[in-house]
Image 1 (cartoon, helix red, strand yellow):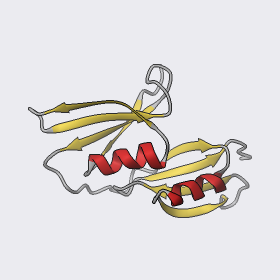
Image 2 (tube, rainbow, N blue to C red):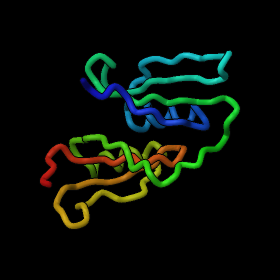
Image 3 (cartoon, rainbow, N blue to C red):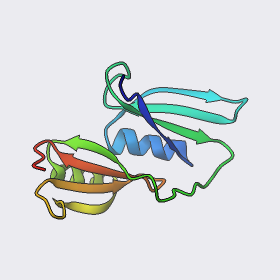
Amino acid sequence: MRILHTMLRVTNLEKSLYFYTEVLGMKLLRRHDYPEGKFTLAFVGYGNEEDNTVIELTHNWDIDHYDLGNAFGHIAIEVDDVYAAVEQIRAKGGKIVREAGPMMHGKTILAFVEDPDGYKIELLSTDRQD
């Protein structure tokens, strides 16, 4: 068994695709419209679906707002250098919600960014210490 994907509902698919592909550097792996159901599924990730866990972006055509709730936490992405990743994301218009630095009560360097719908993405260094 393995985790295949995490699904996020998005209100503006084009903005979300830009964020995940251009700002975070993922690839659009596949996209399909379902006119009868009035929704589109787009899968993005850093590698093919056969070998990697990916993100499914679900766009329901008639919905322009979602209540994120308080149960979902975040998606974590490993990067070589959190400080450099934050600067690259900022330069591409990404929203940084927690600057790069040591985690509270620990030594691991991390940062948080936010996608267009308000979902949090944690950036973690490859040399995590705790």
